Image (cartoon, rainbow, N blue to C red; front, side):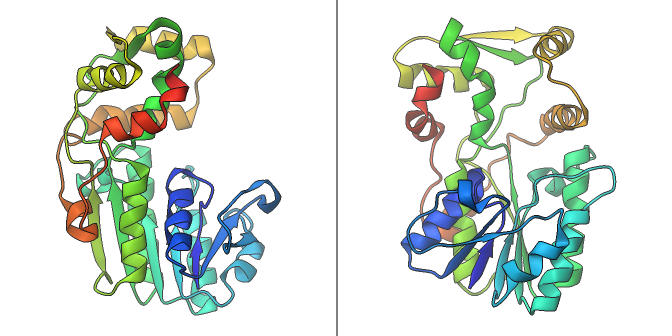
Length: 282
């Protein structure tokens, strides 16, 4: 039995669907099972990283776990510690952790730092581990959807990186491969899409799918911050994301062949992702 944490998220939901389609026994962990919808045959269990008393039941009879914590606070990877301790007590033999490519490139932002510490917790706690380090998710473009729909304009911040962004389904495909085939113990994989795209490239692809031109407007950092303030977007989580984005300009353009090398299929394209999600930009 495999336990998928973060089962309702962008990657977790794709992973559950892939495993279920392959008739792999899979258990999906969510804080609110009554509100979740999963494919037929998936066992659903209540569990919460922040409530360690819920983890033992979720892990009962489980051999492998996909580890996807909801985030990191100033106290560090306490959620991974709780899960790792419960997994060790349950006899789990393989932990597969979703991390971030920032760790590959020695980033110092809070998100990469949290994942780096979480990786070490996983490595120290289980007989076998695998680390997956994806770059920028294509779902990041949801943040531009409202302006694209209303103004046919994509507002970006000066210095926004050229990005080899990745479809969440490709991350899930690699995770499914790692969980179901041998040879991945104590391995770390950095994951990207197949092509590095500038913000202009991204706007052009969205326009191609929608059938109308999308204008790209580059804002200064001060202008972008003023817009965040107007929208009420503030706090440590936003600050951490913006710092990761700033630092990622140094590496987010790097393309890795990991998806095709492990799954045998080329990565999905941004055109694929926008086509699947075109309704949010209309």
